[in-house]
Length: 76
Image (cartoon, rainbow, N blue to C red; front, side, top):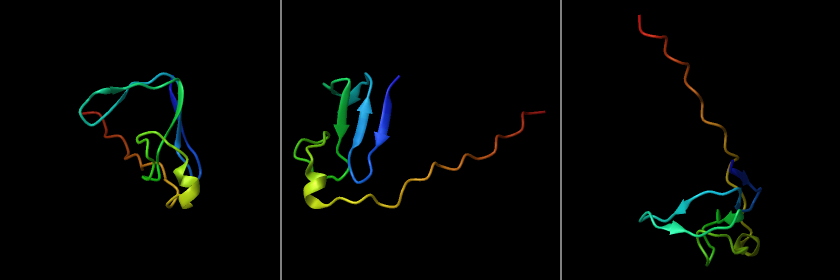
């Protein structure tokens, strides 16, 4: 099972085999552990190149899990 960790003021850290595709659906080769850019300034997008440290990237407001609406009652 894959796992993605959001690193404070840094990239997404991805663990486990996943299929990563570009906007055209082409598979992008990855390893079992890699980082994805979150600051938007990497020269190796979608991968992180450490630029977030140089530019002083700071997380926006921490993400909150989306509210899960209550389940609808089963049809009568």
